[in-house]
Length: 108
Image 1 (cartoon, rainbow, N blue to C red):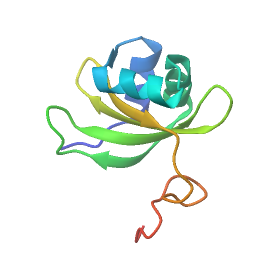
Image 2 (image 1 turned 180 degrees about the vertical axis):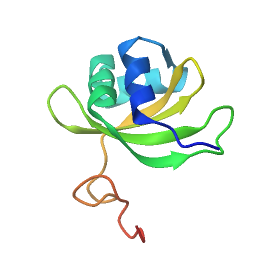
Image 3 (image 1 turned 30 degrees about the horizontal axis):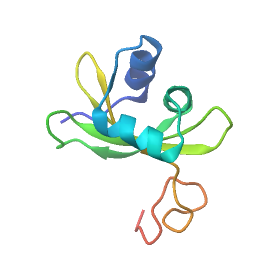
């Protein structure tokens, strides 16, 4: 399977072809993250992990910045026509290296 292209994600965000799953909406409310924060992170972000075998669509973990320049992680699935937002969270400094791109203890 092909890797997901960040430019495709940004285009889908710009074109508002986003699917907000029930799960991501619940997490937004629980974590005090706005939809605008997610869109900001998508537009400023980069893919840090790829999950090409995920079903029903390949997915990825993206690191971007929210409206206040705070790092935000987003897991999203990419179909041919829509970006499925699965979950989002502020990365925990205990689990991630200072750049928030690499998991602590990862061989990367």
